[in-house]
Image (cartoon, rainbow, N blue to C red):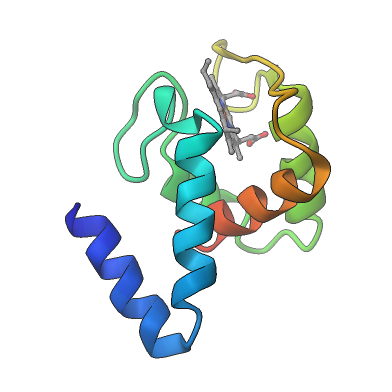
Length: 103
Ligand code: HEC
């Protein structure tokens, strides 16, 4: 839980502790961690690598929120991300923003 501590400390400094914590909880609740970790390759790509890849993409929130809901493959290899119908539109955007903040 070292990572969580760091995020909380950072969030606190920025005055966003509650929302950062909420977004991390959303990642847990939405079962994303079954396939992703923040800084280790699991079945899916590392979340901080995703953040780095889209750092300069102004459409990244839209693109990633869409991908989170609909799934897909071919961007990071042949592995398939299945659709995540349990994630609603607003949560998909919150998750996309959170992932993008991890760089
Ligand atoms: C069953 C495993 C699995 C689950 C569950 C899963 N993912 Fe993925 N995810 C993947 C794989 C595999 C890829 C790579 C897909 C590709 O190469 O296009 C991926 C890619 C991504 C990407 C990058 C998309 C891109 O086009 O670059 C994001 C963002 C992402 N996942 C977020 C999430 C979030 C948020 C959740 C939880 C709601 C989640 N994933 C749940 C397997 C999973």
